[in-house]
Image (cartoon, rainbow, N blue to C red; front, side, top):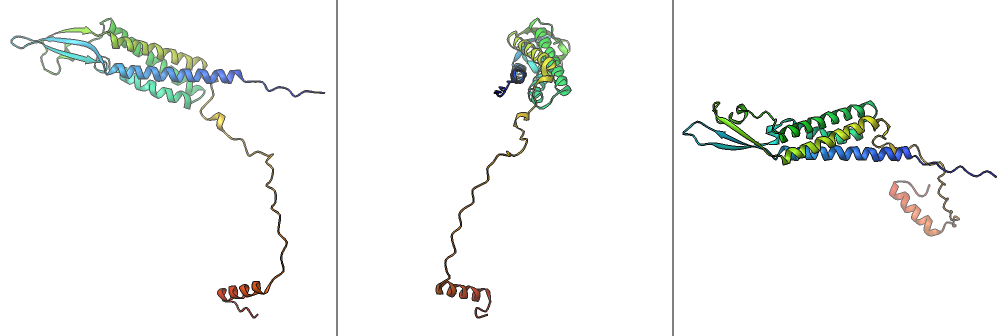
Length: 219
């Protein structure tokens, strides 16, 4: 007596879905942190102008100090959707873009933390038109450090997509229908009532209906 073979699970498919979910979350988290950091202060700039003009102070946000931070954040958020939508070689290309964006984010944040960003007098004094002013830049380390973390998450997400993305399922594959079920039983037929004999009342109503239709009931 032969026993039916048990259905074998697909561990690779389940693992691929989990990896895909992790990659999407990493892209979204990295992009969100980058956009948040781009709108926060990255440096306090003090401008010493020639007497008798008093010194002025400015605060540079992340988008002003490192304009690529906001652009990378938007790209990472878009990549979170693109990783789900594309498959095969297209997904690898998306992974490379994610890794590059994460590297740019991390490098920009690291330069701001170490005070290596190029924030010369041409940037700080363009609004007041004084090219001879002395500029002192004090970096604010908190939000550049957030950009560094966002960059690391982006690089990790990109590497995961490049190395494993070809094996992940695509969007909507599990919801496709292959056809109608063949084993559906037909609906049972309703029993028919036996015809009763026609009465005078039935013939009277039929005559009136014929007159309504314009027919001669006597024919």
